[in-house]
Image (cartoon, rainbow, N blue to C red; front, side, top):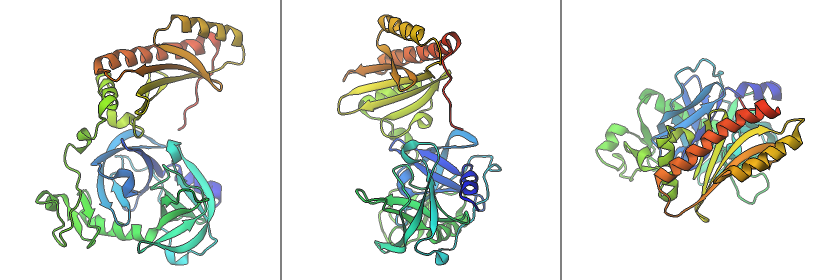
Length: 367
């Protein structure tokens, strides 16, 4: 397969995963009807949000975790027909210098493929073999597939060495295949693989106690209500309560720690809370600058800034942004609701107005 064919094939196979702690990558394996990812991407979560090229963002349960191999399996969306069939490669046939592609969602960016070579096939870390690669991988790539020149999954991109120059490591697909085969007989059941004795512990077994019934190791097992308990604390919790009251599903709009992304009408909204400065920044990314009427548009934005309360227009490159800044250690959900509701309403209004009146260019959205 050509590189372009591989990239196009995996566009419908790779999914983005988001929790309150951050974002990561997963990929669907049709033969096993499971989404594979890293355990550290979903650690402690009973369910996470996923989004793919052909399905909307939705909540899905975590079905299996293996802390030692840093693997996890998630349930796929209901319609799996658009997912392509992926094959697992043979680890024994890999060689130093083989070309590979690391595919994922680094830093939350939608679908990125980086090319490189295998620097060392059998790099051992803590008794586990890893594939060392020089293809650039970053936070958010975790859990994505490492693909060979034949388009086969040969590894799961797992971690990097900070400060290193493209020192990335992928868990070989042989460990993935081992866990897939072990889990299939338990399909649909929540299972944790013991990090010590490697036994499989089902939810029923762990409900009887928090220790492995085979070796006695204490196992962290997500309980019912884990997601509700994991909502934001302090000001971040106020933001989430406000978004709930405004009708948004918190699990779907979370995009990592103290970050939320959503749509208000036609406008894209980005909200972030800085715990150090206690600022809540909400930005509505509207349309792009038009090719004409620039002077009239600038005059309009300046005049509106004189009228707006708690909000202001600005430019980020060629994007028109309506932003607000909240600073209040004693902020209550009711006040946050009023503030965000006003921003959402104004953003939706101005987005349409700028496009219709000034010929501003509608923002492109990735598929």
